[in-house]
Length: 120
Image 1: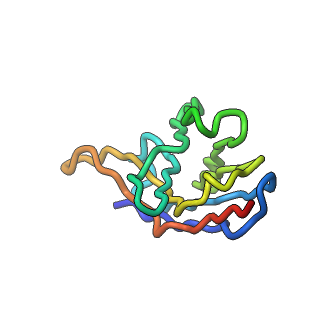
Image 2: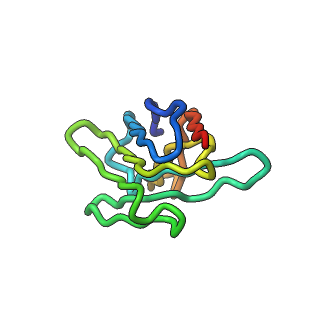
Image 3: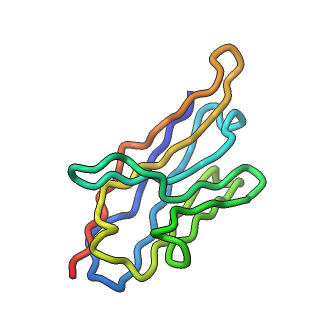
């Protein structure tokens, strides 16, 4: 099992910045990738950014050059730095851990979600 606790988020005006944090605990050695997803009202949950154990990162086209994902392995924490925020970035942001556990197989774990609201 992997537990994820998010922090950060809040309300900001367009053009502003926010940083999300997500601390992982439990079977952290089983984690393959850590990532951030978001879900806006009436829309499906979508991948925002993901980072692998080796540090390689990928981003949704809509956030490239504005958002940066990073991880601190010593703290078992993943961050999402969000700059130049737009109203369309408004959503609930969820931390995700994709893991492989012996006896269980591949599994996805989710944080509780944190609201990000960007006003124009």
